[in-house]
Image (tube, rainbow, N blue to C red; front, top):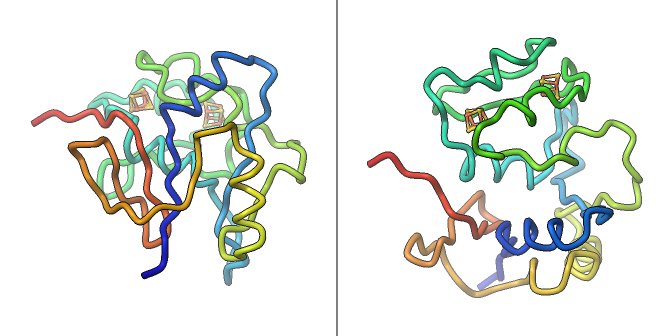
Length: 163
Ligand code: SF4
Ligand code: SF4
């Protein structure tokens, strides 16, 4: 059975706290038919699993570009074509959900890796902080804080639950 990519968001946050100059590699799925609004795996994971899905969503209210909205599942979606990278949402989020390096427009393209390409995926694993990303035979396991993002990616994070 094909192994899945396990991204440990807890370890990534630790690595960023240990080194404030750290530039984290980013994983994306491309090429796709329409690459407009392509999101990094890290952004998808944070809004799905880390975000507390505030009812009044101060991040949405603070956004001067009206770039944030909730989707049908109540998950925050950032319209990348509208976002002006002002980071108001990062600042106002009471739970520190978003990582401060999320919305930079002009990042080093060498830090982007295509998860639809095996070679690129292996380079992504090597480029990430030690212990943060690996290939695994594990399955989704909420008891271990491991959740399925999609058919190829598992995310390890502390998920906020209301029930
Ligand atoms: S960084 Fe983007 S999404 Fe966040 S408040 Fe600014 S414009 Fe809106
Ligand atoms: S303010 Fe933070 S925790 Fe609340 S919905 Fe926005 S990103 Fe999620």
